[in-house]
Length: 327
Image 1 (tube, rainbow, N blue to C red):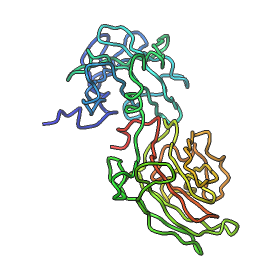
Image 2 (cartoon, rainbow, N blue to C red):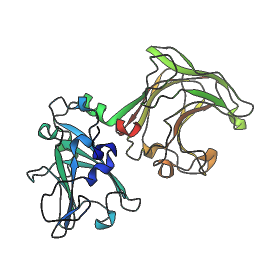
Image 3 (tube, rainbow, N blue to C red):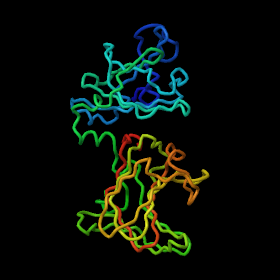
Image 4 (cartoon, rainbow, N blue to C red):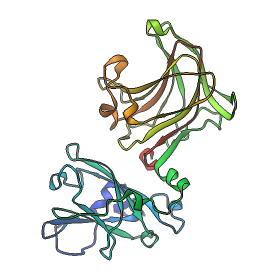
């Protein structure tokens, strides 16, 4: 039987605690010591994939929202917060973002091997006068680069299966589409060629750019909208002809649907990297409302082309997100 606290997922794991000091507030894990408040966080509620551990330091993502954390108790910076081991010593953490208005925050916490066991826990404390070990360098100290990539990115697709289904935990198939008076083939999954090994995804198309026509290849990121506020970058390899806009989109039911960044395609493979600051400013054209408006509710990614005849995409990865964001 799955323990009740674990069945609620990552965030709600914060509401379970043992008494440790001060005055416990009945019914939850909040405790006070003078003006500070504390909660215990169980490590195995944050690390679903125990294969990550390997008896070496690892990093876990801690998500905070209004269902279990009172953002009104801290200022807008979120700096009056400390994360501590059971012996009271400070644990290094990295603040990815802290949004008091939206009542959500995300931290990365270094987890030593001693805490990587069922029942292992650490303490989250916050309140006036507290100053934690906010040190991104210490968080990742001695952790190999390959492991860091594993913990902070997800491969959307490398197309090596050739079946048109993404590598995301929620399986989804690539599709193509076109506006009126434009044409597009079904997605193809074949040899990347042009100096690149393996398979890639491609479409052939016809879309008059001057008339505002377009074609696309796209993918749903799952059955629900994803919070990608911590995104560092979208990375992919592309080649083809014409103009390309890479778009992240939110549900169609909402007014304004996307943020995009534009490129000119070349017949040679080119690696593109899109950071949140690289998306076009909101202008309403094509539904573009900018990154800030869509970052908390993203449902799909699209590669939109016009003014050429083909597009190929390979090795699509999202950096800066926890793979568990897609489970």
